[in-house]
Length: 509
Ligand code: WT7
Image (cartoon, rainbow, N blue to C red; front, side, top):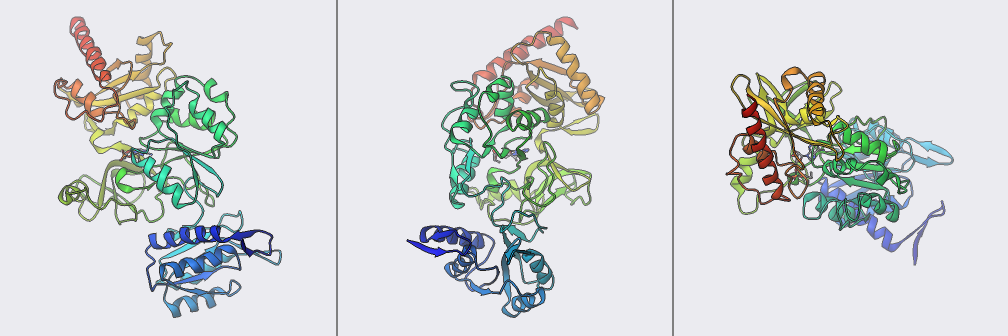
């Protein structure tokens, strides 16, 4: 049975209306709209306006529907009189062949309404409008997911990306989500792109580690398949190095798709810092997480625990206010939760990561704070050295750790993986050193470069630098907890390579 027939020709079944209503009701709740709160609806007669009324009713909020032809002043009057906490509107309206600037009018109105905490903005036209921190886009994500799209997050459900972006996120949004049961190399390195072609995937979300792995096998595995369905590519899990970013963007996305580097953590529940390409004038800078997501207030801290103001600065990345997805505790151990995340910087959630805020105010994640090394007084993230070295065409993957150095305090020790057909290994090592010297500085050049077949990784694809650090500090007999390691044989391989290297070194000195 068709329940609503719109004058523009579309129709809405009860089932769809219920879906939309529930989704919107959940969004309102998520942003703190409770029973008894007042919400202004400033929308023309559309299915979503109906859903907005029902969504309020569903959660016990009280709606005041304001005729979408009223001025900013009239709207403000109604918001103030009824003490509204939120407004629901469209970016623009279309009436009698004319575009109506609904969001602009709301912006004007809420200037004088301090009680309004959020403005929820749906898309009626394709035009982009100005968005503030207070504004919540109803249909845009980081991934620009539109109804009907096929969202392909290839993460395992055994880690948070799978929870939030294979299961809960797509379901909450009534989306279509892909369950990828395989691995990127089986039966061959074209598996992802064959899946994209077969299922017509629109958003592809994966990890830098897989991209670096596939890059090693060349472009042909990608180019064999039709990827024209792809609109957005996403990366998560580690800082994505420039080479991997460019390959993902140029080869996989044919320089046509948006590539978003999304930063978040298991503890944050969902994406916290990421580009928002669907917004007016938004830019995407390669290998940069860019902008805080709605409701996220990042802060950078210095070594004395003080907030660092201004731009072009680096520090420990904290978040200053709670947000809906934040973990509540460590199950059964509240104190451990407090100690791990809230002790170091009282009043702030500490992420454990370091970040740089660019002159434009954009964020770049520089890696785990534990991975910061101090060479002759220069502090730098090992990810920075890795990123520079990864640019070498023969080197798909590297891992750098610090080790005690008599003169410099700490020195950099690099582990590198070479492409299969690489011959001139010694030349590559020298080239790597000069790349680091020119891209970063002479002091950052690793003292040691050791070629290994593979790097030790967790099952979710993160390099376990902690294990490498134990090896280079001669503690390989006590590697700590390595139960999350994907393949323990790799460690034995590396220990062997390291012992051999040490023997060679002492013979030559
Ligand atoms: C840590 C969280 C987020 C779901 C998967 C991992 C690192 C994550 C990025 C990124 C640089 C990143 C951080 C973070 N990380 N995304 N885009 N750029 N670093 O969840 O296992 O809880 O790991 O992964 O170090 O703290 P997780």
